[in-house]
Amino acid sequence: MNNIIQLIAGKVKGEIEENIIRVLEGEGNLDDIVDSVGEMVNDIGIKTIQAIISELNSIIKKSPERSGKYHVHKGKVERTLITKFGELEFERAYYKNINENNYVYILDELLGIEKYERVEGNLKGDILDKSTDVS
Image 1 (cartoon, rainbow, N blue to C red):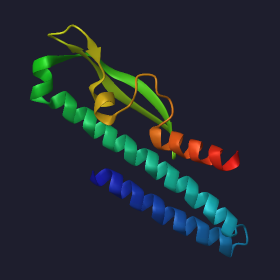
Image 2: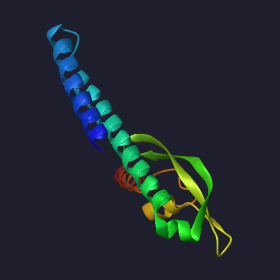
Image 3: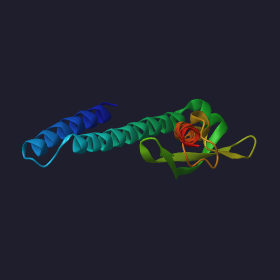
Image 4: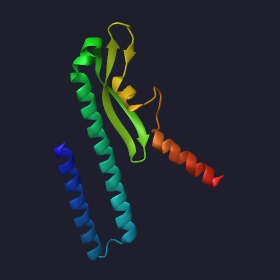
């Protein structure tokens, strides 16, 4: 947890310093700052979500409740979703239910991610809202 906080603090500090230098050297303006900060915020958003997902995946793997009912079938299965912050890539475990002989991504169920979902729910909502504004 502290690693992500340190990463964010370092990114913000670096972004502030870089933008100040660019403006003072005549190589930047407000538009450049807005674009630069927007990219930084998106990157921080993706990294924060990845850290949360990674921690949840770890908690699930270590859970005694899970180990009594599910065995890890595949340890690292990649998943990609498009979010408000950009492309989110993460890994999660694929489990086999010992009793029912079926397979499940427990993390996906916990997070409410549908089986073939490619676009995250909030982004879908934003797209729909904007499309109704345009039409």
